Image (cartoon, rainbow, N blue to C red; front, side, top):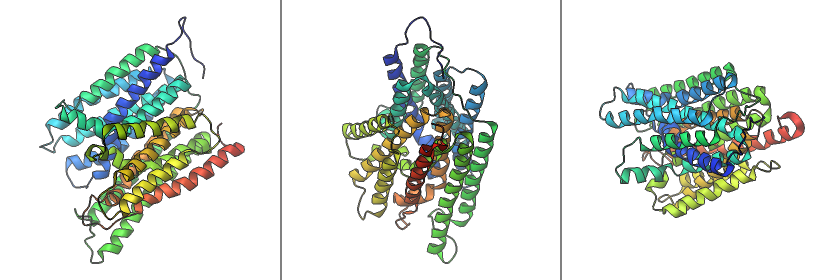
Length: 430
């Protein structure tokens, strides 16, 4: 990648700060819609549920289309994020107005998802702007994702309109675009049409699996057959298998695109899908843990994770994945109310791994493609693992404690070590 420099030096510090703030706004605005809301879906023949069912696939395909276009034409990165956030603002308003009537809510949710996918694609492209912006975007998106519950709580408390976060994100992205100007960084490797096809197939598999589950399970999570518990366990394990299949499809495409080092990101997304779901659902907004404690822990984890990736000597993300999965396991096996330390372990481990993974992706030749494939896997796997994750979080009072949602984290940690070793053996893109 070679920049097209101008006559004046670019204000790197200001550009980095705006990149971090823009990425924070994107995470705080879209984390719940893209990574949390689909996990709560109980599929029925109504527009809102079917709309939620389409959210991850719509967002992922939007990211793919943006990158496909970016391969042929120069796109002002932050203006892509600004346009996505601006378009979503109006959909946020319509969803808020139409919550009482389900007819159009699903359609507006899909539009928000498309806008969210566009904002993420813009950030993925912006990581080509150099190490400073890579770090800023990795830290900003991770902390925005993790603090979305607290931010949403603040907006509600102040009685602000639901689209204020999207408009604020749009404004930050516009200012960032002006500061960065038209530096023509380009990624050497990008996604092909095949990526959109694989994503569409993976999304269809997840939706089909959830539709089949909805015919077997009632609203309380119990199978309608006589042998309820064994069948329910089989259903949960089958959804874990669906999430694994989606990961294999996307990681396989990543290997063809750039080797094991690119496949590293989809596998990381698989490992973080279940632990980061409660974070996206905004559990921090209902916890008694104070703002400074939550924010400080998350920012520290994100900073350490991002800076750890300045050195690629060890697969640091494995530590974060295991910590996040361990926190979720503690929540699922605890006999009393959720302890704040369990939540903080989950969110800090996830923040560490996600920030480190984003910075690692930005350092690859096919960096934008790797980031998009990782986020795609995370969205689709989180949707497939939703029922097991909800049981692990004990949101279903009639369900027994479930550890199914923790399996992907353990599997992912092992596979990440293998992929890291393969890429270091000269089979990756570095």
